[in-house]
Length: 260
Length: 261
Figure 1 (cartoon, chains in turn orange, cyan):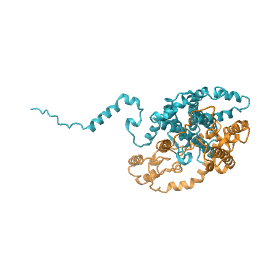
Figure 2 (cartoon, one colour):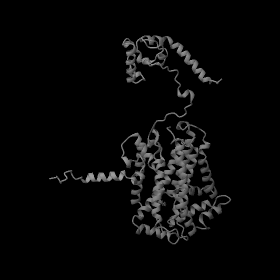
Figure 3 (cartoon, one colour):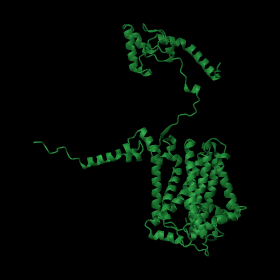
């Protein structure tokens, strides 16, 4: 014999109990004439009309009033409990004298586990593409106008015999160059950025906290903010506050020693 | 006498244009170029079906799914930073190809080529400026994109690996920018690169070899320029495009962008 899963047995038991409890109520509901509520019915109006007409014809117009009342009875309980109200309608007939019986409704969740929940989605066009287009256009406009007004630097041709003072790396490496003033080159140029990079790469495997809510990840956010600020400050010092000999200067006193 | 005057009105210019357009759009050539459902075949009227066709019938827009989560289109969530990084990459590719026409990676001619580009080539200065500022902007936007992703916790499962790819892309962006920095071959470029490569020389154990491979010699010279030029215009963009493809593909496979918070 096929084994019936326990949760289905439980559910069937609950349904039986519920049906037993609802029985008296359903009986009274079936006996009293149901209100006219076509919107409640799942059966199209024209089909109801047709079956009503057929039934009226069959019973010789006798059941005009009773048939109309049953036609809108659509609730499962009353279908199951349906009593012959109109003359000539077979015992157990459904709405409008239909003789089919709805045995059971199997909800999709009971036999198949639906994992995907419906997600509130919008069309990419126009909702996303329009925003992307405007952003790209703004970015292009900014780059274009900036390029018209500000020229890229081109100093004199390179001369291996003449070291510019100060010699600076590109701005995004100036944090590292700034570290060079404090540590041995191996620490500043290799160890610190290397460890930083490895930690950054493995961040998802180190941070096991599953939440993405800011209030749940105060430590991670603080750590990252401190980290970003650390580099931002170093880059700014390296960019604006370092003059000849990579000595500390104030840009408003000694001028700016910085090329992009 | 038979009436020989044809009194049907002559077609107006507008009607003749319309019939030409119709015959072109009904032809085999046109319908072989534009796929069924393309807005160039039957016009565009706003309907859910046509909104889907816009995405499905374009090779570029096809990077996107037809539908995205409602919160994902909020500019305040992504600030468009990832998309702008990609856009800047395209802009840099286009301007970079233009620059390649006027540049020879030899120590004797590199600086003169840039100088001539600025003074004698139509729009040369403008395009070079756009390439330079676009590159700096891209470093900034990739960096901010990383910060945005971190603060949203978007690197968490199932997106861990895409974060790893993203950090690689950040590194590649920096390398692209750094290799391009040398190419003008002026005092700024050469000495900045000297500072950077000296640092790499301190890599433990094989530091000297790393530096030698990068410079193509013991000191910065012609070989370095050629090497970094090839890295800049071919090798690194090639690798970056592959990583970007994986990055974008994974965004979709991992269920679209993260969130909402």
